[in-house]
Image 1 (cartoon, rainbow, N blue to C red):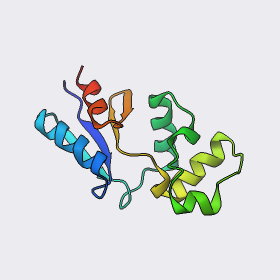
Image 2 (image 1 turned 45 degrees about the horizontal axis):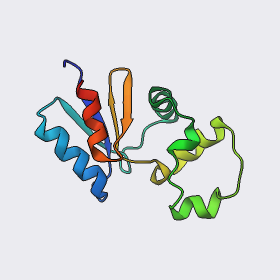
Image 3 (image 1 turned 90 degrees about the vertical axis):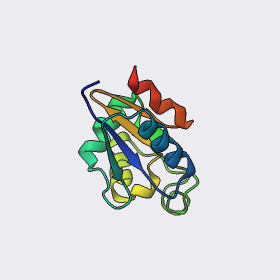
Image 4 (image 1 turned 135 degrees about the vertical axis):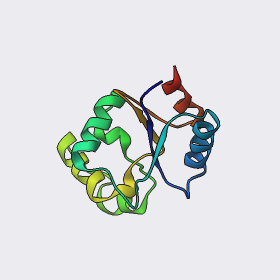
Length: 117
């Protein structure tokens, strides 16, 4: 596999740490992005949701306080959800692994291994 895997990672998340460990164990080229410190752009989020084959709303962590405070009960279109994810990276589901034109959400963490096929 020539393409590196980009892992959008939160080191405080056990699922994210587990996904990172699996990829390190597989000894694949890896770029780790702490997305809370270096959030993906709105354009990158749009690309990631296309690669995942999901609507931006499906990438939203509904348990976060910022969701409950600002977005719970609201109906937003895809553009507004992309804005919300870009403005509040804490809302982004994690971990996300991207390789070439493919992406997976590492829940469970073993899902990231699908990118090795």
